[in-house]
Image (tube, rainbow, N blue to C red; front, side, top):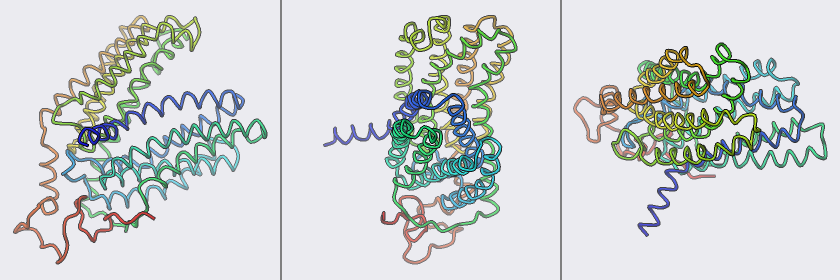
Length: 442
C-alpha cells in the first residue's frame, strides 16, 4: 500500500508536466487538422481568435489569481484571503465581457465570431478563477484533472469539427471555434464541484497588498513573454529573411522543452516544490530528458517535418533545447520567489535575461550565435534567480507575520480578537463557517 500510494502521489505531482506537454503536442496536432480542413483564411481567423482571447483574458485577470495561491509552503497564507481574491477575479471576469465584445468586433469578422470570442475570453478567466479556487482548497488533484481535460476536449472537438465540416463545409470555422469554447468552459464546470462563494470586499490594506503583488508578478510575466520572442523580433534587423525563417524553425524545438516550466512555476508558487532545494531535481530531470530526445532527433526530425532546406536549423535547435531546460528551471525558481511574496524579484530575473540578450545580440553573426546568446541570457538569469531565493529564504513567513499576525496564529494572542464561540480552523485556514468551506458537490 505505501508503494502504491507513493506512485499515485508522484503521478499527481507530475500531472501538470504531463498536461503542459499534452497541451503543446495536441496544439500542433489540432493546427494540422485545422489546416487540412479549412482554408488559409479560416485557419488565420481561428489563430487570431484564440491568440487574442488568451492575451485579453490574461490581461484582464492581472495576475490576481496568482496572489490567491502564492505561498511559501502549504501551511502559509496567500497574499490576500482566498475569498477576497476570488471576489476580485469575479469582478474582473464581469468587466471582461464588454471589453471582449469591443475587441472582438475589431479582430474578428461576423457577429457569431464576436460572441464566441467573448465567450472564449471569459472562459479563460473562469479557468484561472477555478484554478485559484482549487489550489486555495488544497484540491491539487482537481487542478491536474482540469489541466489534463482541456487539451483532450480540444482534440476531440477538433476531430468532431473536421468530420462535420466534411458534411457542411460552410460551418467549418464556426465548428472549430465551438471546439475551442467547449474545451475552455467544460473543464472548470466539471472539475471540483459547485459551492457558494460569498463576495468579500478587500480592505484598504488588502487592496494595497493585492495591487503590489499582482503588479510585480504581471510585470515579470510580461518580461518573460518578451524574452520568448525578443530573438525573432530583432532578427529581421540584422539577418536576411531566409535566416530568420531558419531560426523560426529552430525555436519550435526550444518551445517544446520550455512548456514544462509552467508546471514548475505553479508548483513553486503554491509551495508544493519538493524540499528546500533551490531547483526541483525531478523537474530538471524531466525537462533534460525531453531536451535530449528533441535535440538528439533534430538531425532527422527537422528535415522530415519542415523540409531539407531547413537542415541549417539543426545546430540552433539543439542549442535552444538547452535554453529550454534553463528557462523551465528558471520558471520554477521564479515560482519559489513569487511564493515567498517577492514578485518584483521575478521581474528583476526576467529583466536580467532581456538585458543580457540585448547586450550580446549585436555581436552575433549567425543564427547559431543568436541561439548561443539565448542560452547565455537564460543561464545568467537562472543564476540570479537562484541567488535571490537563497538570499532570503524565509521572506514569506516574515511577510505573513507582519500583515496577518492574528490569522496566522494557531493559538490565541493577547493582541488578537477572540474567535467566535464554536469556530475552529479549517484545512484552508478559514473557519468552518467561512464561505470558503467546501460544500458537497452537486
